[in-house]
Image (cartoon, rainbow, N blue to C red; front, top):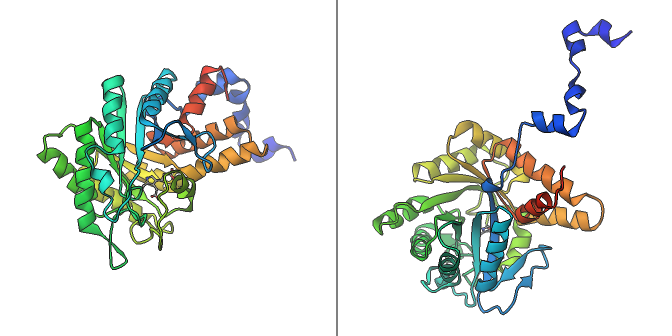
Length: 337
Ligand code: PBG
């Protein structure tokens, strides 16, 4: 029996391969694009460093001294990247993460230098959390072995305020404390920083894919894990509640993190909310691909392109990715998927 005998004539006339016939046609009918203007590139700045230090868990990514970080940002801007997420690695850690809210801390100084040397025409986002700054490695204050919420939130608000004072456009609280967005919004507003935006790491899961980042930032918890504050990856309705909470508390942008194993969460958030939606293509997702490429089993360019497109297609407006600079460099070099 021929195919035309079992399917309707209209279906028989449809040949979906017609529009796949050549590159230009595929370009014409593509449903998803990645604009450089919707990518955010993470930058690690480390106090007391003389020269860039390669991060062994993240091939191609470095810890930078402030001055080199500023140069790196300048270079990335040349490729079309204009938004950066700054992570600080302090020299001193203590139980209360004091360096996080030190007005002369590593992030605060870095943001000031970016403003002095590049000016206002670059979007500076700062990660607001305590884990790089506490000696126990947890994202908040620990009392009797527990991470206490409300005391932590006060310090996060103070941290965000010092970032705003230094010139950040946007602060991004990532510690998964309840009410962190509300506390930060209030602290910013009370100090007159009504225009500084808040990007909530709203649905941030307790994930094995943060492993390389914790090596990069020396921020692994010394005891226990982050499961009492980061989300359980078996849940998606709970992610909706987390995003709802951040929106009620005044978040301007909401986020799903990680991205690749959480495309269903991104798609759900896209359907239910109208806020700009960010997805964090995290360190473990980056390193998996880099190592597979280094082993010669996955084509890096195609792999990166496919992953970032998938995150976009799932519904993310913005993507935070360590691949951002590579992708734009490949495009600059004329590479086409
Ligand atoms: C800080 C923070 C982490 C990441 C972003 N902000 C680490 C963590 O929660 O343990 C992870 C980013 C990545 O893996 O790329 N709380």
